[in-house]
Image 1 (tube, helix red, strand yellow):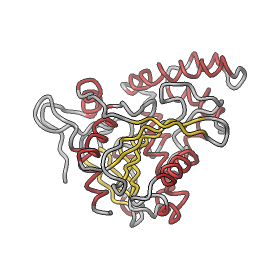
Image 2 (cartoon, one colour):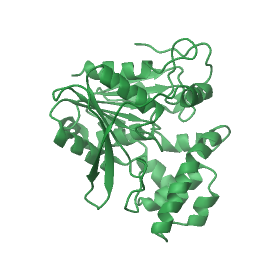
Image 3 (spheres, one colour):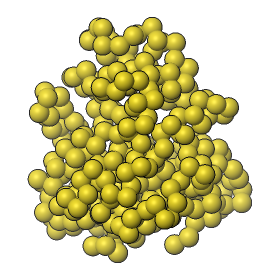
Image 4 (cartoon, one colour):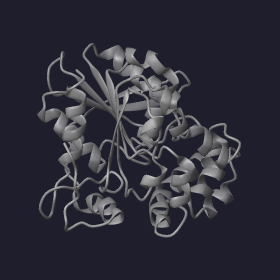
Amino acid sequence: MSYRAPWWLPGGHLQTIYPFFALQSTPPHYRRARVDTDDGDFVDFDWLDAGGPASPVVVLFHGLEGCSRSHYASVIMRAVAARGWRGVIPHFRGCSGEPNRQPRAYHSGDADEIGWMLSVVRERIGAPVYAAGVSLGGNALLKWLAREGPAANALVHAAAAVSAPMDLTAAGRRLSEGFGRVYSLHFLRSLKRKSLEKHARYPGLFDVARVQRALTLREFDDAFTAPLHGFRDVDDYWHRASSKPDLPRVRVPTLLLHARNDPFLPGEFLPAARDLPQAIESDFVDSGGHVGFVSGRLPGTLDWLPERLLQFFAARG
């Protein structure tokens, strides 16, 4: 199913911003389950209990500072329920509405966390499991798929990454320049607040003055994300956490869905078809923005994205 942005919503920035502000919807009813981690922390899983015990389960990994109530999460999970499937959204640490217990937070290449979350789901589910990641969650999912190679098939039947910043250096540069700084400032509002709360509980983990001065994601990642998660600096973090170089090792059937006018990672930074393995199907559409993909007449809907994902999963069931 092909995508074309509506005529009344031109340009990657509008296609990114409009759905965030204008197309928010009420999330479906979730059942929250808290699972303790081996390192003394916790992760909150929001379960969508639609369908029966044999119904497939869609695991959705949210984006930077997202959660189960994000606009894309709500529309995807409502489509999952309408199909008679089940769903679950595991929250990256600190994103479920309560600070996590340990110093670590989460980052774009958190393959270990993705693997642990999927193992928790697999322990509870005997039906097919499909994994989808949006933005940061998509990049982290791709890192895990590449690292595990054929072994990933034991946990998931198929996967999808939506608007994933596969080249974090390129994406970080875009978000530190021009209009991209608007997106950075939006994310920094909550990122800084959470980091300062963490500093109050764990003083000395990072240079709090540098975090407070950060005006771009590059400055924040250099001051907070990189040192907190064992990276030398922001360049080391962005290089090692980018999924693009690892994609040839993916062996699970995977959909790469991305708009070429995505303001976070435009088309010139997307992988070429010759660099992708047989397991990956790329759908690089001309427009749609970053996790936008609005369709229909004004005011539009977000129906195209979940339908594209679920059709891909259903064809590999």
